[in-house]
Amino acid sequence: MEPLSPGLYIVATPIGNLGDLSPRAADILSRASVIAAEDTRVTAGLLRHIGTKRPMTPYHDHNADHVRPHLIARMATEAVALVSDAGTPLISDPGYKLVRDARAAGHTVVTIPGPCAAVAALTLAGLPTDRFLFAGFLPSKAKARTEAIAELGAIRATLIFYESGPRLGATLAALAEQLGDREAAVTREITKRFEEAVTGTLSTLAAHYAEAPPKGEIVIVVGPPGEAPPASIEDADAALADALTRLPVAKAAGEVAKKFGLDRKELYARALTLKDE
Ligand code: SAM
Image 1 (cartoon, protein in one colour):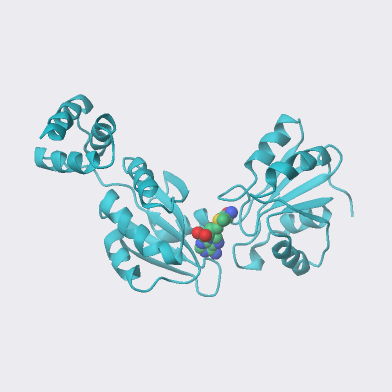
Image 2 (cartoon, protein in one colour):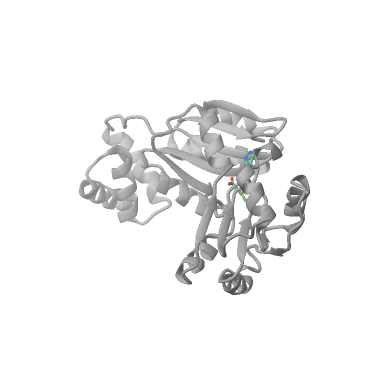
């Protein structure tokens, strides 16, 4: 087998169905000098599936800073492949700093694209795909989560979140409360035996999953906001009062101005009055 040219090879792997490993990915993995893997036991299973054995080295959040310089040095003369446990490396997985440092060192970087749960979920959801924003995992602490959702509220794009079963109900409820009752989809176990996509509004989905958290891996897809209705002063005041419980005056005014397409300065003055009342 001809050796690969030295450099870094980013290799996407299946998110459940081994049949999704591309022939090119299998070829690169079989010929790499070393495979940097998030969990070498998981990757050993994939290598068994394609009937090959290659040297592996763990590369994960806990050892990356220590291991990275050694991998960068090896790329000068060897082909280093990077894989994560499932899907595309760097997407809610380690790898971006490895690519950054490989580039800085002048090494060749090659990508072998393939499965990614975020994009797969988007293809299942039946929601607009012309503009989308991948938001990864929301923070688990309530305050940080509220702030993260508030930041996304005004973005006119479909939103994609990774989530786990036990947190799904609470996350959907928080999204419904802060984003309004948008169309959404909960996609689960994509490419696996029990793949499903449940669609509805955020509040119906929150109610559906409140009692029984589902098993397996989950992606939430949320449609973009509708055209903002002309807000009444009461609506704006209510939104301001809510925002003021979480944010300082200027930020609260900014958030509500964006949400309703209103003048930020006027809302700032209004927020100061509300705060004094
Ligand atoms: N790098 C991966 C990718 O390209 O999708 C994502 C890794 S991230 C650590 C793992 C999360 O991706 C899971 O918690 C889940 O939200 C989502 N995920 C991965 N595989 C999935 C699947 N088969 N079905 C639904 N979601 C999946």
